[in-house]
Length: 143
Image (tube, rainbow, N blue to C red; front, side):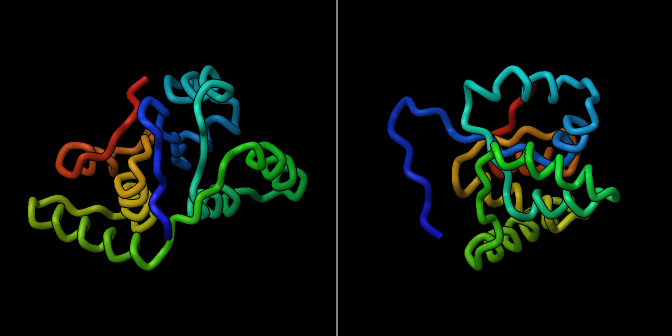
């Protein structure tokens, strides 16, 4: 996977975690969904293929599935599961375990590792990402 190259002054893309997308799609108001609504036209907003899978797996009705796909097609979708990201994710998991922190979600570990590698910011509402921010330099949006 080619690393994203940004020109100086160009804002990083923002990856939106499923913890925010699910609330957003259900019309729940949170600080994160408010931030997302306010920044859709201003920032480069995206998700990874794994986040896409997580969100779509939770939908039971065919009509809602189609409506959700229509909303999500407006986002950039990044392939977040390359071999390099998988190895980096395992290394990050191990580094956090050495600090006494166990991440319970493989997808969250892959998402955080992808964002760190690509220098993307993450918008989330999930405590699993806090150790990545604290110990590994994950850039997080705090609305």
